Length: 312
Ligand SMILES: [Zn+2]
Image (cartoon, rainbow, N blue to C red; front, side, top):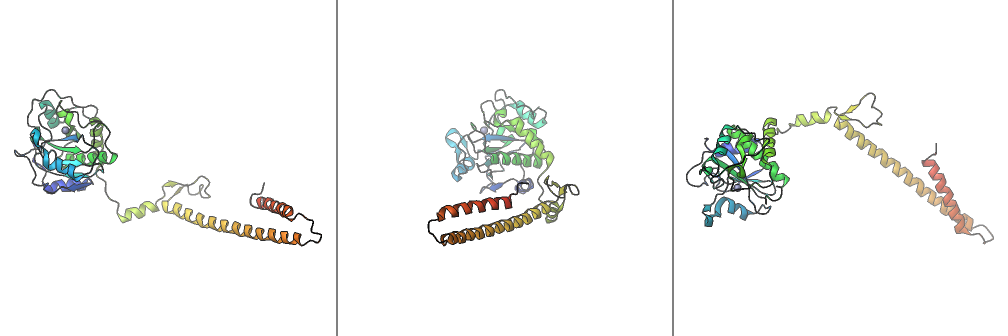
């Protein structure tokens, strides 16, 4: 059994693991009577719609289901459909309820093959799940997959808590592994989920890059240069900043070439007009000026084509 993480300790591990979280007013003191000594973490789905509504948070953290004898708080954390983790309580919550004693023993010992399979609880023979487990409600239907952002946050939240308590991923279970009365968290495969937590814990939290790191990354040879690059034989790898410079210089060259072609076309159009006028001025008046102008324009286009796309 462990003491609940203090508010300070909880915030420090959430920050350390870069969990996207918001503190729900009253989170440090909200609790059911009876106390809590967390030794495991239960994943739930809310079973309602994908949502990030304030009224749903109020239901989860405050109101609950008093008519069914289950007043709030119903969970310690809630992850909305935008992937934000709301922290509603560090106390005891009505999340787990009665469940299977053997599951609790496996969670304490972390001795089950939980990275490849799920636990199958028998009948509820342990009545004190709320004292033993903290829980998160993920605000999604369960009949459908959770939003990618929700899953990312769920893995990070679980990793942060496992780290804060010194547990492995095997201390995170689904509600259906605690009690056969339940099927949540729906479509979430808990073996895969625990494997993701294990990998995240092994990888460690993201460390922000310093300014010096950023400069170093942009200056270091590391990207393969284009196959038709003139420097392939002498410099097969470029630094990102060199590649960027190459692109910018290429763009300037391209703009200059396009402008030169535009100028030539303008001049040729003027030549065609002048020729047309000259032909019209030929004495006799019987000449088909338009036909001649069309023929001259075609000839000029052909010459232009040869000039810019020589057939060599
Ligand atoms: Zn549940």
